[in-house]
Length: 173
Image 1 (tube, one colour):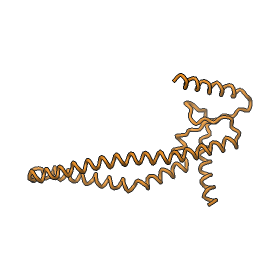
Image 2 (spheres, rainbow, N blue to C red):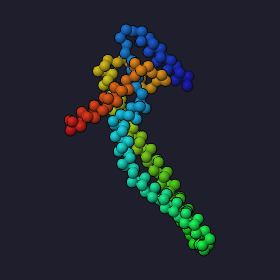
Image 3 (cartoon, one colour):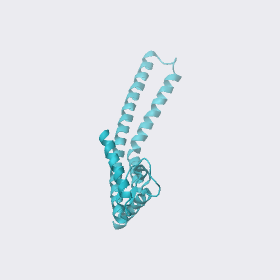
Image 4 (cartoon, one colour):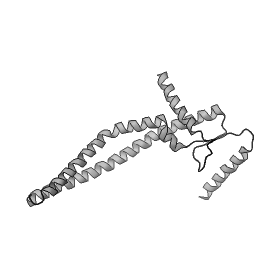
């Protein structure tokens, strides 16, 4: 923790020292916003939704079946023989166990795919930031800050660059 504070203090001191230089240019990017609003991020989200929609529908179907079976058990409470009731209860228990397993696997797979896609978007964002830094002659660009003055926030530039680079790559194909 102390090393992290010292490294952070060093960065701040360097920024202050360089900021006093006449032509020092600093920018800050809100990475969370880029991962939420950029064209590649939205396409990744759409891709994941399509990829997992079938499994999601299957889980919803099983949830509906389990609710119907539970409702049937509740409705026919006194009408069923003990053996039939036990069989339906076993069926419902097995269905719930399978459903919980499917939901857990779904969440794990979904999170894994989201992380994979976000890593790709983050890599593209880093390349966009690098290109902007070189083109606009930035001396320092930070991706996260507790506070950022809107004058040095270049998040919109990064989002725009990502949208344009996607359009350029499609036009080149």
